[in-house]
Length: 73
Length: 450
Image (cartoon, rainbow over all chains, first blue to last red; front, side):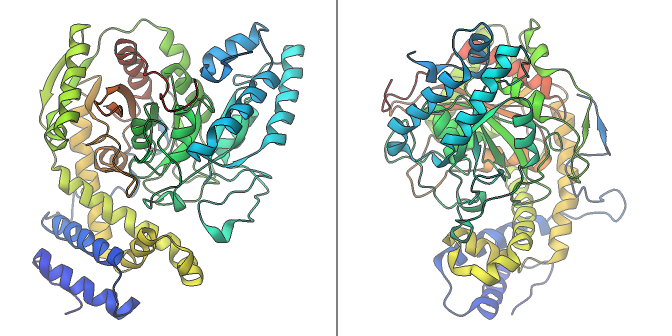
């Protein structure tokens, strides 16, 4: 499996991610790649547990809230 | 003149203004200090001896003609990830070993225009990521100085320079400042231009400063704040004159104690933080425990997905050309980051908004929120330490500052982090000054020459 379902477990996401790494970067995974994959799989799983609404859960691509340009300190 | 290397920026400016010594004397003393001290620390990537002395001579003429600028003659270090005109900028990356920029990063240009003198470039971990640096912790051999602004923090702690620029994408200003026993400040997102700094993550990168006094922090921030139309994230700040704000008598603050972080910290760090809170309370601060409205692990998961995706995007082409030149952790970070789905990145950005709203409401109830800066004292040199307690606030762009708050039995610094509501930077610095006044300065690290 090289992709995962939205309801996948951490382990399923990790297995899929490791398969993707092998496919993209070669079979012999480095220790650092395995470490990164575990952290990313955990993070992907955690954010997938958080349902969002189409309205009201728009992204802030920059952490400045509703302020556009002028701010008052 | 002896002991000029112990002066803060504010003290040095006052002394030069009253004619006690000149910028050339000060710069010469610090260059000498670097020469005698840095072989044990490795805080400097490049020392611009000639450029600094030339600037000092020009500054001396300005003092003579009374055309003094706000930072006239004050020496600074600059993390080696900011472009500096005529001075090599390597970012810890071997293929950049001959790269000499033809212009300054905006932050550096502002400091120079205000009269500051750049002594040189301080060591950064490779591209300000988490692979360990060559720099040593001035407090104790075998312990990390933290990263990624490793050289900036170590140089300030070892009295080689009174202040230095750093950058923070997760915890890269506050954590090394904490491990090295000095002050590290990261302003609200958008207040200091990032133009001309090699990016890690466009929506997380902040410029910060490392100093030995809160007054110096305010002095530098006053110059650095300001709108830059060429940085898409740059805001117009309508806040107080920070240095003037600090001269006002400040009342003891209302402090929200984030006990969830104390529960995650090592026992000695949690105990030290509780002792710090008691000292502040005895001096009049109103402190109470508050619940965190968001889960720490979720916040760091959101931070990871955003930072790793943006960093992978930034490095994709260069990694294709020069993968072998990447340090192991960064290389893996970029390679795995390229595989994060776009929908997950956007999901994380949407969650960031929720998290920011919840934390804004909490932060507005207090002058500052308080937590340990790092979960442990400086660990061994195989790591740069745990970024989660600092990165938490970087994700949402809140202003944060680390002040030293004691020494462990091993002789390593403890530090306390204060965080204010967005754009309440003046309030944060005023509270930090009050707290630092109660907690006091740490001595210079014992392992270095006095």
